[in-house]
Length: 167
Image 1 (cartoon, rainbow, N blue to C red):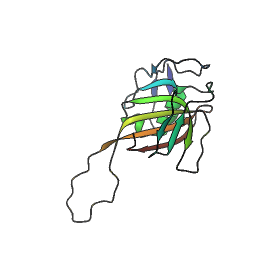
Image 2: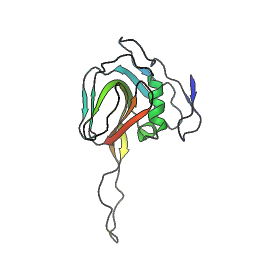
Image 3: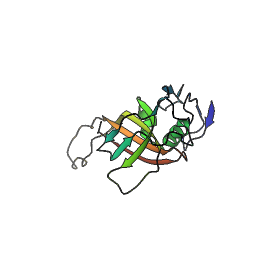
Image 4: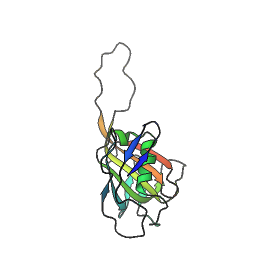
């Protein structure tokens, strides 16, 4: 068990089991144990085994070429949640995988490998203009979005995040 102080979240006690950097072997799923109050529990699923594409988010994930990162998924969880990402506050199906990533709709690049911290059920609100003055409108109800945060697996630093309605 480690005591961590992510940005703006106060004292957090986080227990992550089975997510240390390892040689290239099959990793059994591990959970973060009891999640800190207000933060989602995460499941580390090891190296990504098949490509995943999030076209609306501009993120493509591939199985990693380097299976020996210098950091572990606990640092990825801390970096993603310490950056204040909504996925850590609201997501329920939070997963972490080791992957190589390409950003397809920005000129930014990320160093590979990365830990992709992903949630499939983060509340989000529809985009669009605000109602015109004097028009009575009902409060828009949130839908569920996907959020992906990328953390450099060799330095443990937050690299990029995107969210949207893309599955």
